[in-house]
Image: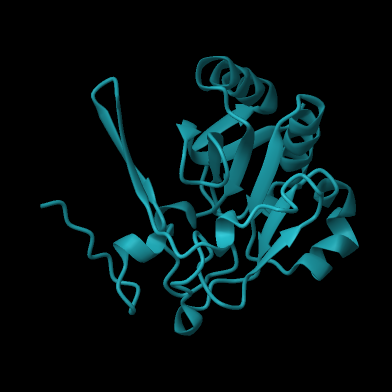
Length: 198
């Protein structure tokens, strides 16, 4: 079994793809997109380093408690941890869970080295975030160069990412607050954080 280095995870979210989803933010990225909305996840440091078996247990718990339909993988950069990523997507497919994955790499380049992983991903959002191409018309897609690639037919008729909705989600659990949402809500055109609760 491999290990995964995660920055954080959510047991259930309704704004990280179609349906209710378990969400994993991978720790570490070497792409360096200017204006990245997940600055705290860029460092190649150990954060929550754990075996995939533990993550599988948490996903099964979420499936039982929240009836999740799938898992969304963000970063950081998931493909910097290919061994753990591979185990995770294979396990999800075997357990009837869909997989949505965001990557800063280009699909065609990933195909050269990670074609087996890609066959287990239902939707891949690819490409680096480019601030001057900020996309305010598609949900969760950061910039206009990024593509929503439907690798399997699971979501072939789903237009979730084509909707011009930006959402935020606030969860409170055991006296801890989690704020999650589309970066467009939190940042201005220069990538400066300007989210305020009134």
